[in-house]
Amino acid sequence: MNKDELMWVEKYRPKKLNEIVGLRHIVESVQAFLKNPKTMPHLLLAGIPGTGKTTMALCIARELFGDNWKTFTLELNASDERGINTVRDRIKGFSRYSRASFGNVPFAIIILDESDQMTRPAQTALRRIMETSSRTSRFILICNYSNKIIEPIQSRCAIFRFSKLNKTAMVDHIKNIAEKEKLQVSSEVAEKIIDYSNGDLRYAINALQTAAAYGEGEITEKTVLQVVGEASPKQVQLMLTRALSGNFSEARKMMYDLIGQYGFSGSEIVRQVQRELMKVSYLTDSQKAELTNIIGEYDYRLTQGANSDIQLSALLAQFSKFKK
Ligand SMILES: Nc1ncnc2c1ncn2[C@@H]1O[C@H](COP(=O)(O)OP(=O)(O)OP(=O)(O)O)[C@@H](O)[C@H]1O
Ligand SMILES: [Mg+2]
Image (cartoon, rainbow, N blue to C red; front, side):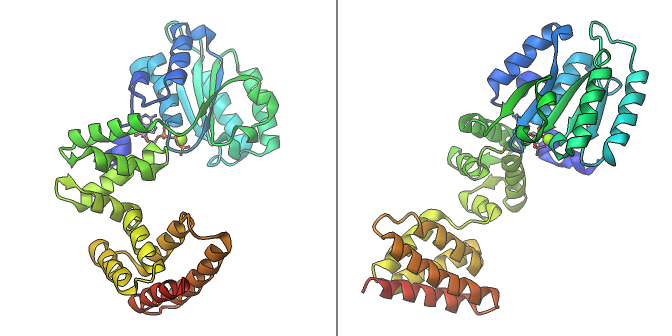
């Protein structure tokens, strides 16, 4: 077994278009092209990481060519290949070899990942290659930023934009994987993972797998928080408000709970305090600025190796004095 098979992102990567999570509109448009492959234009799949761009390109190849898809598909990574000449040579070699058409599909597929990493001259050369090989090849260009792709290429492609995936669909997918892996994951915990994933399904699946390696069969909120490296915002917020209302010893006790329960480092807690501070509605901007200054001081001391219990206590002491 190789490493990829152990990775759940690979194990659960959809093989068919209709298994793709979210992206209904894109899937439907692509399916319409595939009904009559001759109508399929070059495609440009653009958007944020971990949302299914590469997956979709591979699904398209599979749906067109079935088990033979590898024979008729050239996968290139624009940032790996040494310059456009290599890309050109490989595409030339490939289109000569794959000229024979497959069933009713009169072309082969060239998937060019990370195409926004190509320089402008390289893109201009690519545009020419797309023109000369368009009888025998369809390109699927993949990128994060479509505005880095030159206009003449964009105008030759049908552009599909991938944005953050739908939360509910992501939660369902995570729960599905958990079930197949015989893990207990409550809806609240699945939602927590998705909250931290910010629309990136790859991140969510990796977080689930890491959490599974910690826990034994059941994944709790605590494990998830350990994996994503965050203290529970609610508890940090509570600690912060206690301190700000002058209740030093209670705030300090909560800090020890945070460290003890979750095993967070001092700097992680400081980072969370900073984030939660910005949300406190009853402080003015200048008060927030002043408190941020204090946080900066303690953050620095921690990076210098000072004892984190003492430094965090001192930070809370400063906050407790603040109102008076
Ligand atoms: N829409 C989706 N439906 C189902 N699984 C998905 C989806 N998006 C991502 N995944 C999961 O995340 C993994 C990574 O997805 P993929 O490689 O398609 O992302 P990408 O959009 O190409 O990201 P990048 O921009 O980083 O290359 C897949 O193997 C799959 O397990
Ligand atoms: Mg990709």
